[in-house]
Length: 311
Image 1 (cartoon, helix red, strand yellow):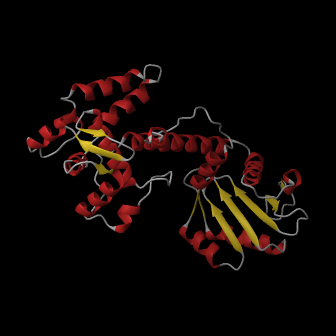
Image 2 (spheres, one colour):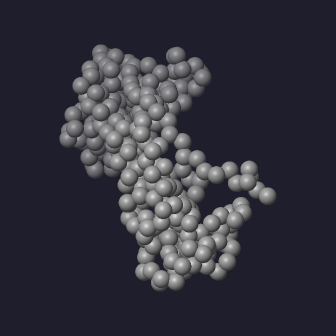
C-alpha cells in the first residue's frame, strides 16, 4: 500500500492516544504495523534524509490534533488525548481532517496566526500556505519542498536557454568552471582546467588536470545543441577516437540537449570511461554549485528543541 497522507493519519493517531499517555516513537511503529506498511515504506526518507516520510506525517497529524485541542503534549516525546479528543472519538467519526478540526476555535486561531505571518510574503507563497491547510495529501513541508522543486526546474530551464543562446566558447568555459567548482583539478585550480580553443583541438574542447603535475587528465567534449537535437552514437565514437589520440583513458561528454539510446549504449561498451551529461543533468549541477545563479533567499525549517523543555 502507499503511505497514508497526514490527514488520513489524524484519526489513527487520536485513537492511539486514547489508551493513555504514549511516546511518539512507539506510536509510529504501532501505526505502521496496523497499516501493514512494508519495510521499504517504513524506511522511505524525506529529501533531507533526517526523518522517514511516515514518521514526518504522523508528527504533522499529531501537531494539527494538538492545535485543535484534541491531544496535548505531556513531556518530551509524549502526548495524550484530551477530554475534547475523547468527545470527538465518542462521535465515531469516519475521518478526522483539517475540515473536521476547523470546528474548533483554537484551530481557527492557529490558521489565522499562520496567515498573519504571511503579510509580507508574495501572494504566490501565501496561496501555498493556504494549501497547507486544505491539501488532502501533503504536509506543509512537503508542499514547500514541492514548490522548491518547481522553482529549481524553472531556473534550470532558464539556465539552459541562456547557454543555448551564448557562443560555443562560452559553453566550453562554463563546463570547465563547473568541474573546477565541483572539486576536480586538485588544489591548483588556476592551471588545472582550461579550454583548448576551436582550432587544433583535435575533437576535444577542454581538459582538467586531476593532480598537481597533470599526470592524470579528464578530456571534455562540449556540444551546445538546441532542444530536440539528440547526440547520436557517431559523436560518441568520434570522441572516443579523440581520447585515443590524446592517450587519454577517460572523458566527459556534455551537451545542452540529450543523448540517444544508441549513444548511451556506445559509451557503456567502449573501452575508455566516457561519462555523459545531458542538459537536465548539466542544469541540475549548475544549480547545486551556484554556477550561473545565486541564492536569493533562505528558508529554514525548524522544530522544537526538546532538550530545553526536558524535565
